[in-house]
Length: 328
Length: 236
Image (cartoon, rainbow over all chains, first blue to last red; front, side, top):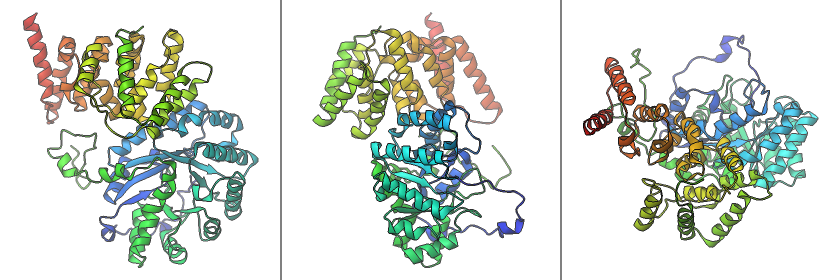
């Protein structure tokens, strides 16, 4: 979940447009453990597959528009385990999700109570790899209450927790999120603290939690900074994600950061850990991730599938030639 | 309430499961089956229905020819040979829901549909032929035909004897048009010969004309359906 952006931002701060060169990471596989595909287009899915992304986790979040009733939550959760899961599969990407009540909407207490009653119907579904994204936004008493309640739910269901850390008063909010998780008896190894930065990472790692970094332009981490973090802290319990959503964000943040790491001389083993393996190790504690499911999908030969460009097998989506002005 | 011999199928499913899962899983399934009825909230049963994905191994069901024949004898053209073991276990769980009270049975099944994930939905639609009060599920089946999820659509359209038996002409024709539109394996639609009709053939011809006008190819199986209708006319 990210904060709102201003489109009045000085154009120069968007940087020069450079052609994307991912040659250095050809053949590598990536796992993006935090991306909101509901808010993204089919173009993104195709670009992600081309860049080597084989699996993703879509955390339940705030859709940008506050929900006014329980049915909106139900339909949203259903879309994460239904339609979006299928949409993703059409592009050869294995889709998992985490289910939870996001911190911002936890402040609508009347509705939050109902959502808490709804959650058990969804957290045991196939491919639900954790409770998330939950935690603090404004750090209100209501956020505290529902964060705690959902930690208990995670314990009951033996699921990992994906913790959103606040934009404001971040350092203190991150410490507090970990304090509470420990107070509720969760093993830090089952808790992924998200949206870290240079100021929070040390404490998160020292206390035994997983440290996720969101590579998100302007508001969270830039990937040059991420390279420095890996140089300093190594690759143990560190993972990167895009948290791409309805804001100005980048669904290729994980492969791009891997490419930058490679260019900056980071060891291949470390790149693989932070852009693929660690996320799997952390979320596979749910018992819901079988790597065979997504390794198989990478063996789909698109050219074979779509030869003749009419009959599509296996529910795969056809390619359109983006460089042509002709639309067939 | 059932239009087939429930006990034969129920026992057969149980024996298939018994020979496919370890004793611990079998006990787990039997315990969860008890949640289908009685005093516990039905939501606990729904959670168990979901957790089948974690408890039951990810493999295809092993079915003897004899078992396949028995199933086909109980519900004509019904086949589970392409089902996963998880699907068999889930459908067996559904079969444990007491059907003696129509309203309660229907509300339980509808609750299962409401929050079902992708594979659960595909399972529920594949299970339409075994549900009690078959006439009631016509609308649900029509909802399935409108699904945007390929696997769900597959479960409604292919190897499923329910649509041909219970759908009205309008919904049935939609199913066939959708099958052509989404390139399903037409040979796996049950009851096509019986249900092919003039309105369907007219819509198929129109569709073929549209494709032709757009310079797109036409699924050759479309003409096989048109042909079925022509043959049926001659026979009559």
